[in-house]
Image (cartoon, rainbow, N blue to C red):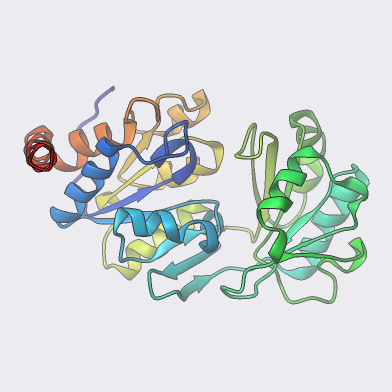
Length: 301
């Protein structure tokens, strides 16, 4: 790991989930769980900052023992957990969202709309014409939430949605991105997401994980210099730049590393745990916690 001068004590820790908190097998390693729990015991507020929705984030929050607002939908929503109360939402104007849908359709890409239906989370999409294998996996996972409708009515005449998403080949996303960038919106793309495809996300202008982190820090009465954010992908860049400590995972693309203050180990090598150990707690505190955890484990054998 590279090292920079200390910015300030870490009081709030925001962790991305996929590719960061979770290892390549999609699990939270024992080392990472111990580190997160040690941070909480040291009085650090720990939250998740993710592109995921509440429905597939709350179980992970429960596993970590979090009792704190979660930053969801790439910053478009903040939900108090475990109470399930929405504290903040930022929607995309329906006319801009429909323009994004129209761009996708012109390129033969299936639009996926996440409407603002509170925590009764739904997925609106078009007819099956533009479905692909990646979307088949996504729709299968969330089939109870799906609703199909004509493209022209996905957003037009509807309440403002949270975001418009696309799952397709990287070259296709790159080809249509200039048209999306011309809209009055914020957008991010990643080369490979959880379903094996490139992904595009379109949201309200100014909405990002950074805006979500800033809103939560203000809610907690903390300055951004006391925030540590850890991430691995393009949609994490904004929060790595806004946090006092922005930490990129070891396997992150170079653009993400360049945006960070430091680079930790990869998610296959407990990068989150190592970042917490070095920059949030200090080596001694976590080593002591690990020793206690190991002794407790041995006593059970």
